[in-house]
Image 1 (cartoon, rainbow, N blue to C red):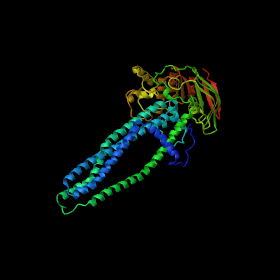
Image 2: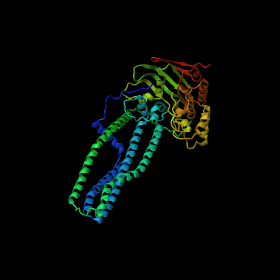
Image 3: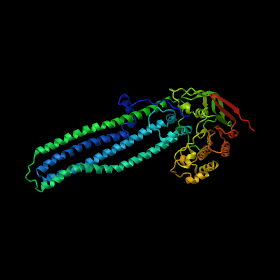
Image 4: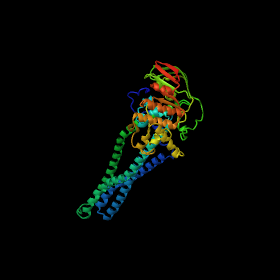
Length: 534
């Protein structure tokens, strides 16, 4: 069930108002964290180059008037000296202008890097990305990265925000590195284009000098008036050109206003959600010890994972009750099967158990969960692990799919870890997948969702579950695309690995792997019964 916040404000348009300047200043704190920062030094360098460029441009602009003088006086030596000086100034001006463009491009890349990484830190903190992609639609921004946008809920169940943060930053670095390489190549193009542009300004004087010094125009007398007119004409044309450039900047300023409002609104929302998050409600995945091999004990041992007392669950966007006064204790060895028709709150209950609703619903919205919900076991590979209804795969090798959401292969694992992965893939019925990918660590250029069938995706999810070996496995119809025989085999392997199941399903064949059945009847009603062992 997708839960949405309030709709965006109709007719809201970016304006150059007080809010714009406040947001603009907040963004500058990210772009220029200190005077000694790389961005600040690049900006100061850009200013110095721009000032020097203006000085050189002024000297280049005076050259036409000097040409009138030396050509009018038929001064050949003066013409040669002036032409040499003009070429030197034009080359210098072309290089300064090209370096100015190059520095602007580098500053743009650096700004984009710092601002995007800053927003990533806020976006992937806790499960903020889940709230913005699933529970909120009042932020008008195309900031939602496609990988996490499409799979926000499965990633939230896996508590994979920290891993996706790292992967997203790596993809950003590759993009920025490509832009830097392109800009380095464009630098020489800028130098060539600018040099030919300014050399064209003296080419006419060089051409006219040939007949003058050849004596074709020996009867013409020099005139100081031509020199003065030429000098003043340049100054006027340059001033007019500067004002024209300022007018042209009006369109750029409107773009800056739009970007400032969009980035500022996103930043304000992320900071506000971070401040409103409750203590203990959001566990930052960066605090996990994801480098531990599966099977290591959790820091605190407990026989109970979830304790619910008189819990009431309703749809956040309506007053329709899904579950009323549910009291439930889920302990080790007491697997629970949740059944019921569509819309009775099965997945909603899993969201409560996963802490998604309780941790992401803002104070400005009616709280969808009432009563006491105690989560006594850590989430993650060593405690409670969720297999969402839609299998989730990240980009990467087959090994990375199996060990997800662990960051990397364990440094000391070696062949022993390879044997475990191969064994669990075989138990899940995916031995052929290793051959298709040409090994565990072979990079693939396909989307896993495109090459795997629904049944293969669910099998691969179980291979991941076997590898991580949590104490509790919460399965949301995780075998819906598999036959009853395959389903029974996968559950049997999970039991042998010591897992306690909390399953959502409809098949009666699942009952033999569970101790309790929670039937959701709709309109808040439910029935909890113990399964008789035959």
